Length: 409
Image 1 (cartoon, rainbow, N blue to C red):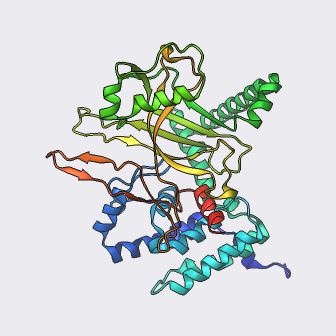
Image 2 (cartoon, one colour):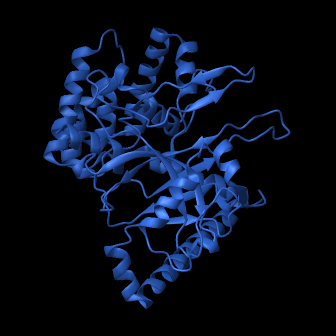
Image 3 (tube, rainbow, N blue to C red):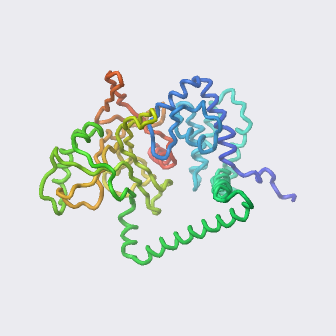
């Protein structure tokens, strides 16, 4: 084969070259520089984010690292330490590339090489061939070994677990065939339901670009006083009164008061439409207060997730950066009682954060503050005031990274 370039036969591999070959050494370098204890404390102090693994015991005690765990650490590690390498890894994981994104990959690699010191990492050299590999073979996610290793779990480990461990090869083959038949039947039923109602499908494609999944019956029925004390919603009644005055809800014959009780949800899945230019299909949003002792000596803290909200109601697009978006923390997801009217969807009581300001020059992330300063108490009764300054993570997911890039550009 005289016209074959043997070096082009080695395709980019994000899992083994970037995460297991380069990023793991960078994480060890950060632990030596900061101290393993201090690095663990930083990871433990990070707030919980939907779709992101929270290392509540730090990262130094992890005995067996996988690509999924390295990916979550890279999304949490702030750009103060290793921003250019995280930019390179994020760009390399794009599913679609243009001339602009390839140029950004090259620029991130040049900045990383100009600032790195005492890095004796063999696989750093492979990063130089990513631009040529993507141009020749396509996006690197198609050659990522993480996909095949995930299929090994689905097609080998789960299939073996479903067998009786005797003559298991034939049983595994039958189990996989049954799973694929069920999947095909499920897709066919979903397709047939869509084609049977073309009007509803066209309406969903044009207006309802975001759907949600929620429990059929709310698990909690609590009072306004409980909402104010445990859910940090002191202005719940006044805010609901203002909302009901602005819209016309049929069936309403009274106004909300402090003696009302509401059906409360603690979890909602927000599903993105396939027509949107977003990389993640679903977000899980949790809203629940601090739970008492569960009987195993563990206290579960409160969890009120934070989301980006479109103020105008238009379709969110990563190509417009943070234009038209505002950060909010959801505290209560509730169902409107029948005596207050018939509303087809659940409602949410939120705390707004202040609008986005300029990007911080050190971290290259948005800094913002809350309209309300959250307060908490220790077991000894001492009052603690939370820090009113926050940062919006740049590498939480590809959608967030793309919005930062469009906003900077």
